[in-house]
Amino acid sequence: MTAMAAPATQVAAVTAKRSWKLPITLGVFGLLSFVLFGLLGPAGSVTTFGISTGADLLQFDPVAVPTRATAIVLSVLCLLLAGYSYVRVRADQPVGRWVLAVFGVLWVLTFLVWAVADKSTSIVSLLQGSLLLAVPLAFGALGGLLNERAGVVNIAIEGQLLTGAFGAAVLASIVGNAYVGLVAAPLAGLLIGAMLALFTVKYHVNQIIVGVVLNVFAVGLTSFLFSSVLKNDTATLNTPPRLPTLPIPLLSEIPIIGPVLFRQSIIVYLLYVAVIVISIALFRTKWGLRVRSVGEYPQAADTVGIDVNRTRWRNVLLGSMVAGLGGAFFTIGSVGAFGQEMTAGKGYIALAAMILGRWSPWGALGAALLFGFADKLQQVLGVLETPIPNQFMLMLPYIVTIFAVAGLVGRVRGPAAAGEPYVKG
Image (cartoon, helix red, strand yellow):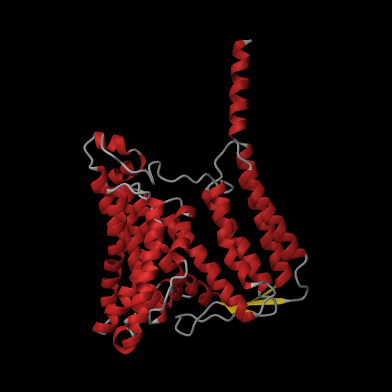
């Protein structure tokens, strides 16, 4: 009797561990896509996508597809992926992140086909703009994860982006060289990071409160300097040159991929390098192992001789410099001048990207691209005068983030000791 009860108990335990959240979520979104964009889509309409630019090595004509039929086919593929995830969960097998990624791409394509019915848009411009808008978010998310991996919650990303933008604009204007602004931006972010480390690591002040206060401080300081100093001498202090586009030979001429990835300014290429270097450093080096141990089990790290607070100091300063570099995009990378509160809450979006990306450099980049894509898409839809309200597209990434944090697309858990001050016993 006991021998037969044991397997039954094990089966019940396995069944209890099954999570149907992902199959249900994918199924619901797949059905919505099939009904709203497919069956109820405009009959007889044609959607046109441009896939080439004038500088491409190979030129392709715009692609025109029947709106309703294409939306139905793409929606069916989404439903098939939902069915695949159901089969995997039922068999107690991992679904794989590729399923969610492919589903997301197909669902967005379905939405685009429906939204651009009887109109045309350039896929290259959409993707290129998405990458640009994702740059400050990705730098901010990278800076935040460097902090949190060491156990310090960085709510001050907004302030670091803002001071980075201010420092880049002022120094680039004075010197007359945009590349000098790339040096000033991380140094400006470093100032905010030093205050964050001082109060949280040394004096053990609540990390959330300090981060919020530093954001308010950065807004007040930059606004005061803008109105009292920069406005009085705009030509000298707030007219920075913009970073030039640096196309990579041959690679920049590849259709679609070339203009998007390899026809950008140096700050975008620095983002590529930062993601690769931080990913390798955190997960392939002894330094990364020490940092992660401090963020997960500081007592154990201290026991084996790692200076916990020194590690946190260094990571806070490093992460703040990375976030500050992202602030340079707002001035020398896009607008060409500093404005009051010009970051407009992007630091908090970067924080959400870090969480959605599961405290991973590649995940943070992917989440930042999602936010950037939604931002660019609402701009495109506004120009095309589609029936979708622009505000809806701005809401979408935040809804996805809520789903992720709620566990609907997988469990999200940050470093165990993040937010906890360490006092050596």
